[in-house]
Length: 341
Image (cartoon, rainbow, N blue to C red):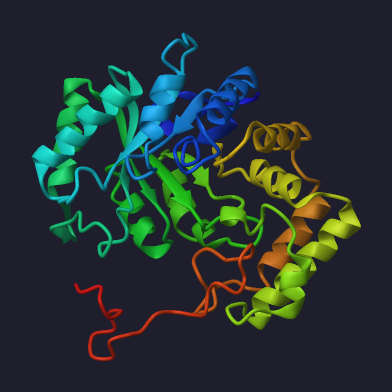
């Protein structure tokens, strides 16, 4: 497994890393998760990301890795614990870190990320955004001085808002998800160039778009469910034609595209099973795509340079009829009814 430096942290991380969302009660069970983790270690993966919001992932990983002596780099997050969660309560934030250390059986957290720092209606972290101020910054810096965390970062899913936070240069690492893959390139406009400018570590999440690029859904795309715009439909059809022409599987193409990009350092794979992980490891072992293939994929990505307005954040390809459309809106404020401010 190729190792790369994670930005200015100096940490040497594996090109492929393991996302812990399914090494939890959300996955196939403890024994399968244990098999998955040990297979990841055997493949040379040394970086694992998790979060308090990923069900009991921290606890499961802590149990699995209790007897492992192989050096492992961990990132976990602040956000969602304890409940009810107040992101402006320093005591709660420190309590969450103490809990993470206990569950993971660690004395130090390598990278502590603010979870969804760019979605204030999910977690209102900030008292001010210009300049950026909030109790979480003081807590993170204190934890760093105490030696309980080594580096601090951001774990977000937007493009413009996350780019602003990256621009502050207050953080060491950015984990960006849902916005940089074969078909989605929003992160390439501001987030990644800004992170490179500041020599931040870059962790790429959701390269398979939560399953939309984890398999082929030719029949779903052809019949065009209500949530699938015509432009996105044509783009998927073009991608599937590219895959047929090149003889590539969609997972292989996605991962080999990702390692072909100079911006990416480590690529998180939220594998559910050891078989899923094996597929990913074999894919990146094939190396980067050819220049001609990359150019064609760039052309396909440009077919939909910006997301259609009503497009779901996670395309429900596996259950295409389960999603009808966006929720009700309050015309006076623009805030969806029931969410408040």
